[in-house]
Length: 300
Length: 203
Image 1: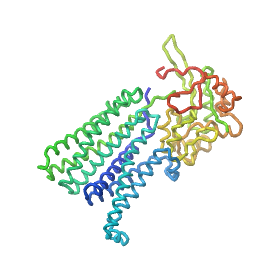
Image 2 (image 1 turned 180 degrees about the vertical axis):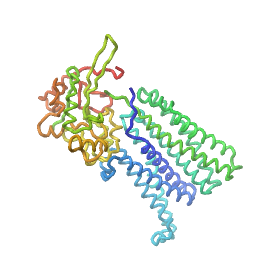
Image 3 (image 1 turned 135 degrees about the horizontal axis):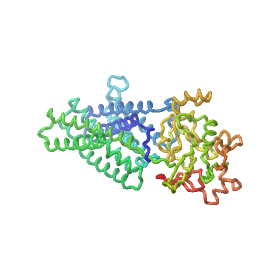
Image 4 (image 1 turned 180 degrees about the horizontal axis):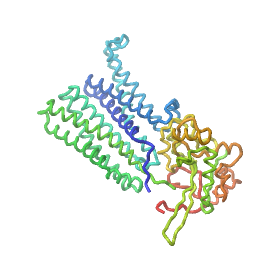
C-alpha cells in the first residue's frame, strides 16, 4: 500500500548534510570571531571549512542530476527552493571568500587592505555578517527543500525545517569541536561549543519528538507509516537517536560536570572530539533516514 | 485562450488499455520499463461473492496550482498558455524535485538506459535523460486533433476540450457537477475530472 520514494537517495542526503554543516559552521564561526569573541584562527578555519563542505555538497548535487549541463538554467524559477538554495550557497561562498581575503596578507592589494585597521575591521564585520546570514539561510533551505514537496506527506511538515536547522547547528558545533580538538586549539575555546551543543542537542530532541508526534498523529497515514518505519530502523534508533544524540549529550554533560578541572586535558579534548564526531554521524543518518522514510500512497 | 481539461468516465472504461498503447506510440514513452504517461489500473475490491472490478485510467492532472511547476528550479516544468503542464526537455536538469512534489505520481524519469532503448525501438527518442509526463499530446492539439488517448478510446470514456468554452462537451459535463477531481483537498485544482466513483485505496 505504501510506496517508498526512490527519486532522492544517499547523494541528496549527503548534500543536505554538508549544506547543513557548512552553513552552520560559517554562521557560528564568523559570528563568534567578529561579534562575540575574536578568534581569528577559528574564524579562518570555519570560513575555509564551510567553503569546502558546501563545494563538496554542491558537487554531489551535480552528480545526482540527470542533465548537469542544464544547471545554466538554475535561476529560472524564483518560486523554487532550489533556486533560493543556490542563491544562499553562492552568497555564502562569495562572502566567505571576501571574509578570508584579508588573511592573504602576502597579496599586494590585500596587504594594503590588511594594513588599514579601520577599513579591515569594517570589511570583516560586513563580510562576516552577510556570510553568516547566508550560512544560516542555507541551513533553513535544507529543510524547506523537503517540506515544500506535497507528494511526500512526511516531509510536507513545517516542523521539518525546524528540525533540520537545529540539527545543522548541532553538527556545525560538532564540526568545530572536532576541528579545534584536532588542531590543538583547546582550553577555554574548546569548552563553549560543547556547552552550546549540549543545549542544541536538547533542542533537537524536542524538535524531533514534536516532528515525529505531529507526523504520527497528524491524520496523514503515510506520515504515520514513515514514523513507524523510522522507529523500526535500527540505524535510525541506534545510529542516530542513541549514538548521534543521546551519547554526545551524555558526553557533553559529563565534561560540563567536570567543569574547569579537566579543561584542556587530553582526555577532555578526546571526549570533545568524540562527541563532535558522533553528532556528525548522527546528522548524516537523520537526513538519510528522513529521505528513506519518504513514503506515499499511490492515488490510484 | 483555451483552458484544456479532460473528463474520464469510469463507468464506460473497459480497461482495454488502447489509450496506453496509443500514448506510448505517439509520445515514444519507455513502455518496456513500465513507464507510461497514461496508465490504466485494474483493481478488484471486495471478496467473493461480492466483488467489483474497476479500471482507473490516470495521467497528469494538469493542475492549475501545480506543485511540480512551483518547485522546478529551471522553469522546465511550466504551464503553457492553454493551461497544459509540460516539461521542456531542453531546460530540465533532472533534479527530480518535480517527481517528489507531484502528489499524483504522474511523472517518471526517462533514464539513460531508456534513452538508449528508445533509439532501438522508435528509431529516435529524447536526447537525454529527463523527467517526463503527459502533455495532453500538445503537438496533436496544436494541429487541431485530440490527444492520442482520447482519439483511440474505443468506449469514448475520455472527453477532452476547452473548459472555458461553454459549448464544449467537456465544459458541459463539468458544469453538470457530477465530475469530480481527485484529491481536490490538496488545493492543486486538477483539470482532469472523473465520472463515477473512485474505489477506496484499500480495495
